[in-house]
Length: 332
Image 1: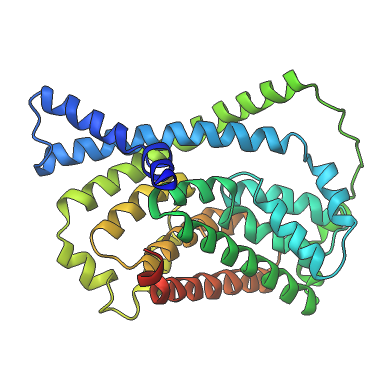
Image 2: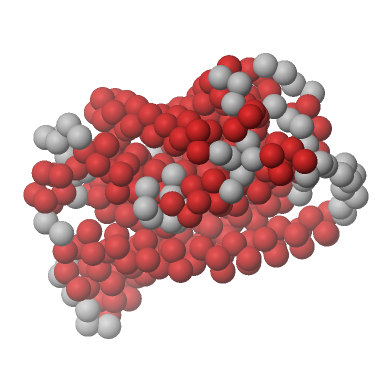
C-alpha cells in the first residue's frame, strides 16, 4: 500500500489529475468528452512532467557536479576490459537526457585516449538510460517496468561497447579527434553553495530547451488519448501485428526529443491498446537514434562506425521491444 501511494500519488501525481478535472468541471467543461478530456490530459501531463523534470534535473545535475569530464575520465581510466564498459555505461546514466548532449562528451573522452569501446558504452547508455527515465517510467508504468528497462539498456550499452572494442573500429574515428589532444585541467572543488547554484542553472537551462518538446509530446498524446479510436492503435501497434516493434522503432528515428517529450505519447499509446514493448521501442528510438543526433555523430566518426552504432542500437531496441511484449502479462 505504501508503494502504491508513492507510485500513484507522488510519482504519478493522480491527485493533480483529479484537481485539474475538478477545476475544469467547475468552469463548465465536460471532462468526459473529447475536448474536455484532451484539455485535462494536456494540463495534467504538462504540469506533472515539468514538476518531475525540475526535481530530477536539479538532483541529477547536483550529482553531476561531482563528476566533471576530467574526473569521469580518471575514473574510467582506472578500469579495463568489460569492467570499464560497465562503469562507462553507469556514468552515462548521470549525464544529460538526449544523444545530442552526450556526443560532445563522447568526443572528449575519445580524444583523451580512452578506449573506443568504453566511450561507445557511454554513448549508448547516456540517451537510452538515465536516472530521469527510471523515475519517470516508474510514475507511468510501474517499478518493474522501469527497473527492467534500465537493466536491459545497460546490458545493450555494455555489449555494444564490447563488440566495438573486439572489432577494432578505431581507424573509423575521424582523425581530427585523435589529433585534438587533451589538456588535463583539474576541476577546482566546488562549495556546497556553488553546487546548488550550478544545479539550479542547469535545471533552468534544460527546462527552457526541452519545454517545447514537452508541449508537442503532450499535445500528440492528448490527440491519441482522446481522438484516435482504440481499434486503430490495436490494429497497428497491438498484439495482432508482429511487426509493431519494428514499425514503432522506424517511426521514432526521424523524431527528435528526449524522454520527457516521449513519455506522454507512450502513455497515450499504451492506454489505447499498444503493446508495452512497442511503446518502449518507440521511446528508445526517439532518444537514441534521432536524425539530428546521427548527423552530429557523423562529424566525429566515419560511415562504417556510424553504421555499426546504428545497427547495435537498432537490434538492441527491437530485441527489448519483443522482450517486453513477451513479459508484459507478468509485469503489468
